[in-house]
Length: 170
Image (cartoon, rainbow, N blue to C red; front, top):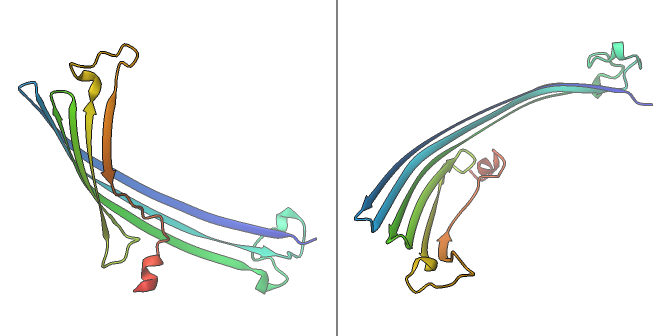
């Protein structure tokens, strides 16, 4: 029977901050405008170290130490560190006409430490338009109390790649 021992220390440090500003204005009960702007930042760090060993000279748990070995080559130390960060800026504008015609536009810029140094930011726009049909004077349906049609388009992305992938192509 092969016995083994292992030990590890792992530390995760995650920080996040979000800032959002909103401005709203209604004009003549016909026009409603909302503007939103904000930033976000995320910082992640992982540190780990430890080791393991197999084929200890004793099966007694009191003797289960990494340094207690018959064969020094069976000792496996490890040390690892990983760090990443994300910085985001975003803005959004909403316009509503007569409480039934809706327009919206968004622009988001996300910068990641995982991206290559020559292409650190991704830009993600989106647009939408909507019509609340059930608020029109011609709407008489008793069975459908609310009907809204909406069309939208947008781009998205992610940084779910390993921290060092962008360095492989530099």
